[in-house]
Length: 173
Image (cartoon, rainbow, N blue to C red):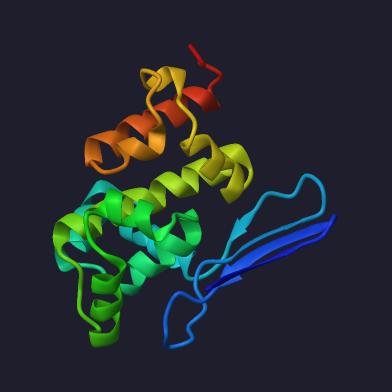
């Protein structure tokens, strides 16, 4: 699935999550001081969560199952982490993708909120890997809970978003 190419000056993570050979989320970091760029199609989801009405309408309409596969690539989640967080199996997602079925409103909303969370986290921490690492360590501002373990609910995602805002403003207590 995902391949990693690492050298001292350039790091690229890309991959294909679909058996149809479609390229999914890609990060690129080149040179010192450059921010990671989240390329298509991850950027394609931004308008779907840009404001609460877009989020609501997009969730009710349902996302294509490919969105879940794109999120796995973006997040670096293992299959087990994805299944624990989103309460569905990878096999189900792959079957939905093959049959071009839409995800239900609840799963679509959680995925869109998670895409938004990762966008903020990558911007704040400078890379998807750094944000992924932060998600897996207990956070003082979250009652010493491990953020990734809170992502199984919309409330948990909201609390993580609030913590990211506090970190961005230097409020670490």
